[in-house]
Length: 104
Ligand SMILES: [Zn+2]
Ligand SMILES: [Zn+2]
Ligand SMILES: [Zn+2]
Picture 1 (cartoon, rainbow, N blue to C red):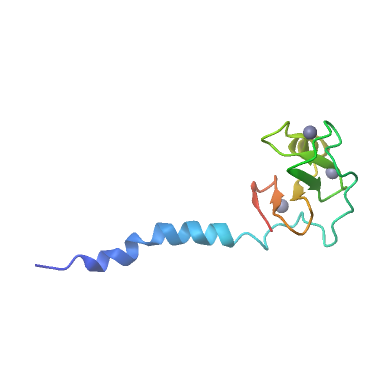
Picture 2: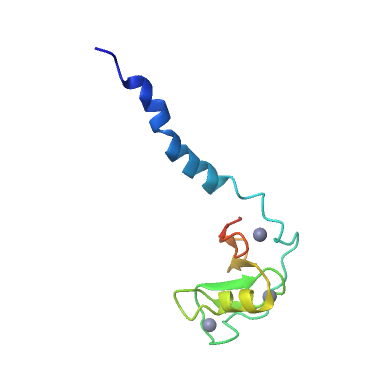
């Protein structure tokens, strides 16, 4: 009657890998500027949305999120500015479209 419990550490590895990739990417992004710019607007510069805004970390452009018209992403793609920061800056996440992951 051999115990099969010795398999359980291996079984937990996939979960650990997910955790590692989720937490381990923070320092990898080289696109995030050391000093973020000042937001160019307090509303989406394309449609005027006032909530769930993202600022371009490269130039300070302000756009709305992807559950709205996605103007922040449209800007990132068209201008080749890969990093956006949730507003208010410093309170939310930072996302890199180049790596397609949260980087802060
Ligand atoms: Zn990046
Ligand atoms: Zn918009
Ligand atoms: Zn920009």
